Figure 1 (cartoon, helix red, strand yellow):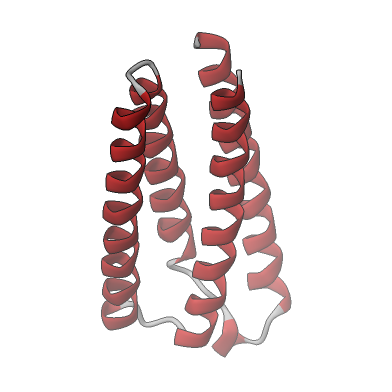
Figure 2 (cartoon, one colour; figure 1 turned 90 degrees about the vertical axis):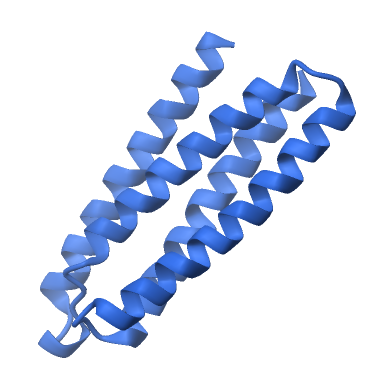
Length: 126
């Protein structure tokens, strides 16, 4: 299990680094009104949340199947409400462009969700 956690943490680090580079390129190439300066906070929130949920689910994997399903459903529901709260908070309090914020939020959501699901699927399949 330790090697799978290490592999997952390495993948999260790589994905986060790629997203930082993409955001820097975005901020340098886009006009001033489309730049997103609070996006690094958003990226950090996604990286920490996905890591915490993945570790929780790996912990629940050792239990019976019903316990894992309950943990998965609970984590998915809580993650959804947490992400919704984060999005509303950023929309209300960030001075950045809301469309740009939504684009980055969706990109991070899909990128980190794809990583989490693929790594979790490989781990559960073992």
